[in-house]
Length: 340
Ligand SMILES: *Cc1c(COP(=O)(O)O)cnc(C)c1O
Ligand code: SF4
Image (cartoon, rainbow, N blue to C red; front, side, top):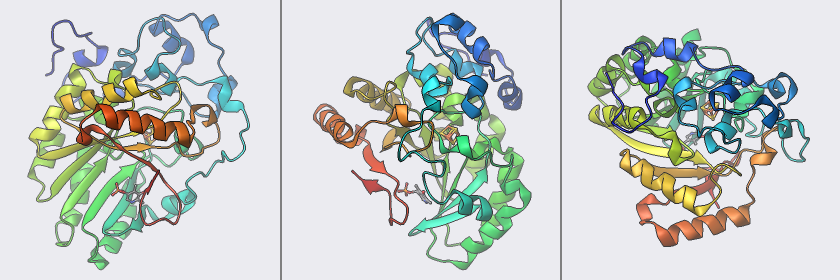
């Protein structure tokens, strides 16, 4: 049971009994008027798009509790609140920005880079981030659960060059730990896979997910473990998130973080430096800072390359090298993420 440290804001999530992460998941805020009321904003202060601009609002209450009260420009609020700007047509911003989403969905496994195979383990997320390509692809609830990962694992078994299996999504930790155990049993007789990597936003947005059952599973895996978090702003951390990160590290995971560069959220050097420092305090290193995928409805978040590079220069001059993320963009057909 985690208790917030003195002085920290006690979130509603902290009061939930351990092991009850699904309940916390279900209790997420899905109504814009309720969200605005919770953060002390008048519904008149914000102009909302009709029908959530075609992508449902969803945000766990613990994350809402970390938003600044009465601030319509709060960097956490802006990541989840539907905006009128999402309805604007912007040239170059398309539904399938990464170009291979159909393929992802069909196969459940993506093997684009040497030595690493990425498994779309789940299509669900606890939070709906407005800049995400998922807004156009309402994946099935549990893709891997549909028996797809047997085929995916077969692909991994046949290719001895694959050293690392990456669980991605959606959020792979949307799956029950029992499902994850099923998957790791399938890996047991594939000796060339020595690393398991998990790409997840849940330790940050729903830290209750990192419960005893999960960490016991993680700790006993006969693999090296890497957990890549996704946080975009230092304010996303609180005592509950720190505790979840500590549990992951105790279970033997190396913690990294990927962020997306987002206009109005984290596109200034002070904010990015604070994020790096905060990550390190939680035991994680910054890994990638992604240029936005050019997804329809997300153009208002874009930061141009020249400004992104200038921000990185400032960071490099201010932080130790290990706290400077790599600025990258995903380009279809490339053998790796493309450095800017
Ligand atoms: C991003 C990505 C990876 C991981 O790349 P790293 O540079 O190792 O973090 C692996 N496979 C696919 C398909 C990816 O998109
Ligand atoms: S957690 Fe990741 S995959 Fe899920 S909506 Fe947010 S950015 Fe997209």
